[in-house]
Length: 257
Image 1 (cartoon, rainbow, N blue to C red):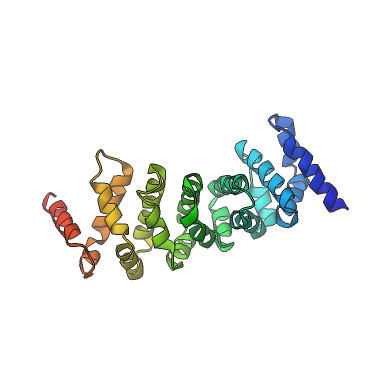
Image 2: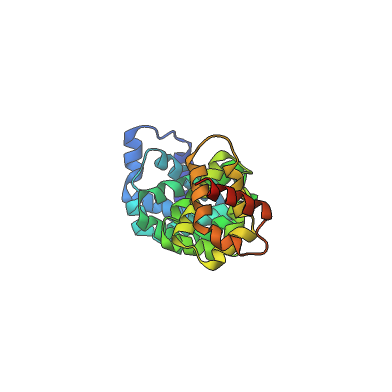
C-alpha cells in the first residue's frame, strides 16, 4: 500500500514545474531521493517514467549526485541503463542519457561505477539503431567512460566496439564525428593493442580518419585524426588490405614534412 501511495505521489510531483529553489531543496533531501531511486529500480513502468523525468529536472539545476550514487551504488546505473534498453519511451531514454551525462561529469568515481554496471556494453549495443539526438548523447557518455582505463578496455573487448563507433563517424552529425574521433584518440593513445589497430583498419576507421583530412578548414577533430594516423601508420601499412590510395596519401603527408 505504501509503495502504491509513493507511486501516486510521484505522479502528482511529476506534474509540477519544480522551478523554485525551495521545491528543489525539498526533493534533494536524502529520504526523498532514496525513495525516487527505489521507484526507478522497482516501480511500475509509469512510476519509472515519472522518476526519470524528476531526475532530469534535478540534473538541469546541477544537483550534486554524490550522495545518491554513494547510497545506491551500481543499482542506480543499472536502472538508468535498463530504461535505455527497455525503451519505455523516447522521452524516458533521452532523459536517462541526460542524467547519466550529469552524473558521469561529476567524478571519475561515478564513471568507474557506471563501467562496472556495464554501461559501455549497453551503449555500444544500442548505438547502431540510435537516432541523431541519442547517438550524440551516447557518444558523449562513451567518451567520458573511455577517459578511464576500464572504459577503454570494455570498449575494445566488445566485438562491436570499434565497428559501432566507426559507422557513426561522418554519417550522423559533426558532433558525433567529433566525439567518435575523440574516443579513437583515447583508445589509440592509451590502448593501442595489435587487435585494436587491426580492427580500425578492417572496419574502415582509418579510411574515415583520412577522409576527415580532406575536409576544408582546420579543426581539433582534424588535428586528432592526423595524429592518430601518424601514430599507427607504420602498423597499418603492413596489412595487405591497406588501400593503396591511403599509402600514397600518407607518403605525400610524410614528404611534405
